[in-house]
Image 1 (spheres, helix red, strand yellow):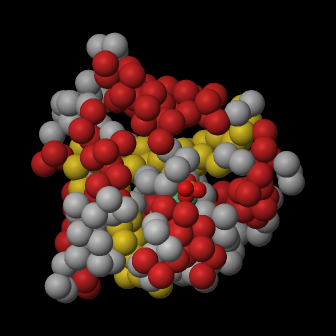
Image 2 (cartoon, helix red, strand yellow; image 1 turned 90 degrees about the horizontal axis):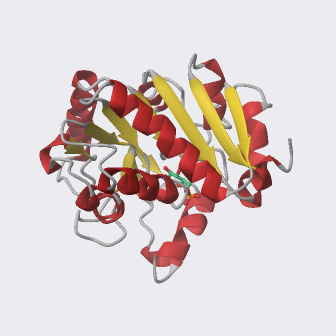
Image 3 (spheres, helix red, strand yellow; image 1 turned 30 degrees about the horizontal axis):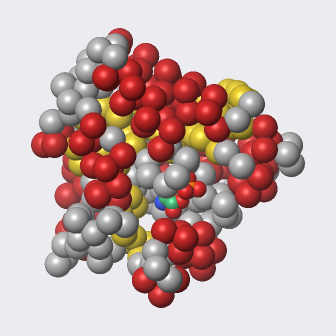
Length: 240
Ligand code: GLP
């Protein structure tokens, strides 16, 4: 793991966008693994800025997202499909047909996971962007998930439901399940960038970089990846 500490969220956002932009400049039809949550929003804003300045085009870029809630339609404002259109896809020149997000509203969710695994087997990721859950999750791989998991249906941890309740009217509206890429899928990307910002991530950061490699902290699996960049702001390093 290469650990880069920056001063604040603004710098973290700028640097992560620069790393992704570099990948696209070297390979205009790159496959990007993308993440949701609050943390990558600044990175996406920087990428949009580069597109608007004419520095970057997403015309040939393909994307695969990490996860989606079960039961939220793609037009639900808290669905990750909506998030990606709102925060990135609608503001750049990417072709909608080149973007992929698991379908958490399919009648047959097992089949939906199988289809997504097929997409992942065809679209080899040049880079995977990740946020970090306060309990050490990546995607929605909660503590205890075996590292050999591929895309699967998962029950969300109580702490994740509480963390994410801030985005819903109340905690009862937060879905209790999600479809997520597995840890094994995540590790298949050529390059991984994981971002963590703020004191509430400090404990998970410590377990990810200093702790044993254990599925009690899914992000600790990244210690075994050959090309993983960890970008942290100062607050997120407060327990290191
Ligand atoms: C969510 C997502 C993760 C994300 C994490 C952290 O539940 N499934 O992909 O990385 O939680 O979110 P945030 O960046 O809002 O702290």
